[in-house]
Length: 142
Image 1 (cartoon, rainbow, N blue to C red):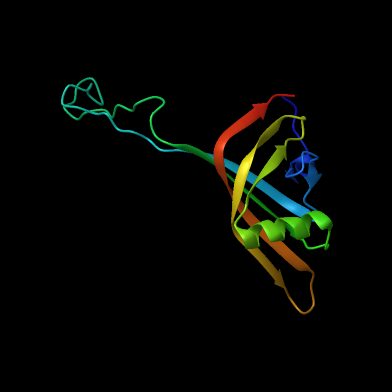
Image 2 (cartoon, rainbow, N blue to C red):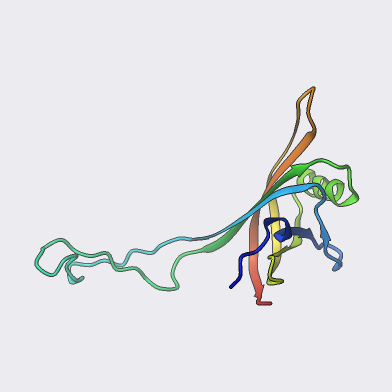
């Protein structure tokens, strides 16, 4: 896989079925989270072949998986930024797309769990937001 441009890693609001990039974005990140279910017993294998300590056994497919997204940028008063701010105020779960530089895409419903605006007297007004997944996430390879 070739290296990709960070400016092509985009968060798009998709509540209407027509994805629109959240304006003024400078930074986008994602993380896939998974809870571990420990099923270690007295019969589990040793951590090292000559030792008595038990190695942890983990249940594959157990636990809860989720995705976190975050984005930040310069507030430009775009219609998409204002729509997203409204979703944050309402606590609304909405559809979003995360588009990678190679054209791959993650789509799903997310809740904005954090929305922040800031501004210094001699600088630009900025925003940042964090979203948490709700239900099934779809990954489409480019």
